[in-house]
Image 1 (cartoon, rainbow, N blue to C red):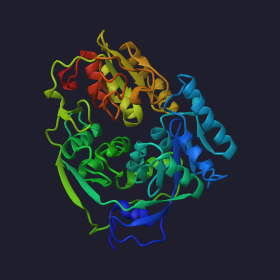
Image 2 (cartoon, one colour):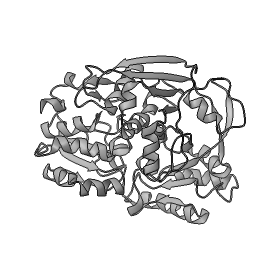
Image 3 (cartoon, one colour):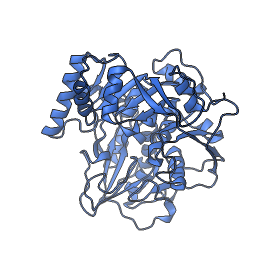
Length: 419
């Protein structure tokens, strides 16, 4: 039968014939991921089920990125558990300290994820790797423990929503705006346990970093995965990051979709998700007189070098507003060094920014930028739930790096074009 992207990837990892959405199949996994928050729970379950070795020491990745560098005793103890387990299991891909970055930027950079892979992670934004054509999804720590021990797990084959983007992107409109617009249209449960399959001429022209930004936020629409075809750009990216043997991937002609959406980007302005849900999306020009206390540029959504360049282009020769704390967190050590070598740090620091280490930091209310009551933040992160970045009485607005940088300068949420 003809398969869409989700079905095609799952079929390559199971001995069962996939014939329909909703079917339960057992699949071999390519990589199992956990971090410093979720791994300790998985490790406890792993040992509780009597497992003594991981299925493949080269196919487990443990990345300590959420509360690191350790912010307190509790986080230090969490990392200690993960570190000791990694040593006990001789896990090849254990990262903390100077080798560590935000997991969903780090693993593609290291060539550990790519087309046709099945990646399961104890983190909801594992879906990022769909930007490279991988069936990548978040799971609970107990399921991750089972996958670490067995090298396989079960899936219900998700129905697929096909989303086609057409038209011409306006200045200062990019991948973050495309995904925010979609989430605003279908809602936070609009793709619940569905695969979002992206295509169309706008997607063809989008960079791999942009595709990963969009795939990253598939979960904010409830999606099981966000999938992009693996084209020549994908294969070039993977080869540049040390992968060999990857092949192009696209849906079969005649593939079945539960729903097909066509979105025109022509005339679209930058989009902003307002508190307290990612689907409360409005064009930036509809937001007036909204002062900001903090601007954060970074995270697994928008902490890559392309994002930092976008922010730097806005900030160059300008100063952040005196009442705004501007925080820039490159997502990996490689990105950090590249930004420094390109002179972006000088631009950020001349603008009054704090440039921090590669860490998830304030995105999840971890550290390095927690909000007090009544404060408002514009951020390139992926979630703006009440209390997500600190006080329950604070507010988080989600945007692209360009909007976040422009808002830091203006002291209020603003369209970069107005600068």
